[in-house]
Amino acid sequence: MSKTYKSYLVAVLCFTVLAIVLMPFLYFTTAWSIAGFASIATFIFYKEYFYDNKGE
Image 1 (spheres, rainbow, N blue to C red):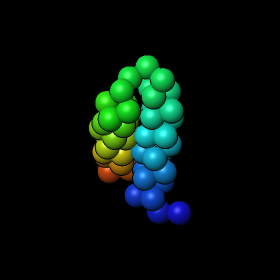
Image 2 (image 1 turned 90 degrees about the vertical axis):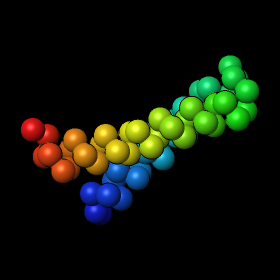
Image 3 (image 1 turned 135 degrees about the horizontal axis):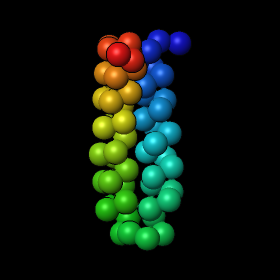
Image 4 (image 1 turned 135 degrees about the vertical axis):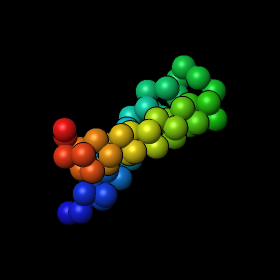
């Protein structure tokens, strides 16, 4: 499994969990927007920090 693919999986997991958790408390589009931005940030952070810098 490639490193980028693992980063995608973590981002999708973050998106799914946040969307499910936030949906009862926020409007539909607001919850999806927050989950989307958080998953993009998670993907970038996970890929840059753990793979490009090798955890340094």
